[in-house]
Length: 269
Image (cartoon, rainbow, N blue to C red):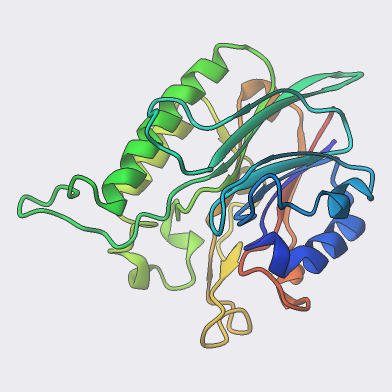
């Protein structure tokens, strides 16, 4: 079973690029981020005409996540628990069943967190974007603990907006004070890993120089001036099924591409 994550940076702008990738890569299931569309205005035919089932959690103009799957999507839930006042569409879950077993899938778009606003003591300013990012990650950790209690294969995929280690950036010094690479952000990510997750790509590819995002400015892709911020985390049950994990970096060279590229894993399901 091939599962994937792709921040498409707007379904209306990147529909042709998404369609081309789906046809070429043919994932069994993919989670999408930044669909930038409400559920009602999402161009469902684009997905469904290729034989995929579709579930969305949309929002007008920004954010928005979705799951596309060749298999039926069951027990679909939308929104990250823990804050009833949070209306940002960044989290979706579903279960898929195969003859070899079921898989719980999470698709997420973790907050960017910039600009980083700190008070005089160095703590994130309440109500600021960085405080929201860290609070969101704490809620995510709590939800992951609950999902781990299901004791079934679990894949948590998406745009994490986290650069885990220095080797995940072409120029790590340029990101030191950025919300994606600040120590608090990386510690929060590490706490989630330490719950018992395997970071699929790093397990298969320990060497530096692999990225999933290149800015549109200054020829970043041509210079390979990228960062790795899209991740697939697998619990122990899913990690035992891991056969491969790759980044489709060549998608970035396509026509009207997203600034992200897909990352995918193959599981023995």
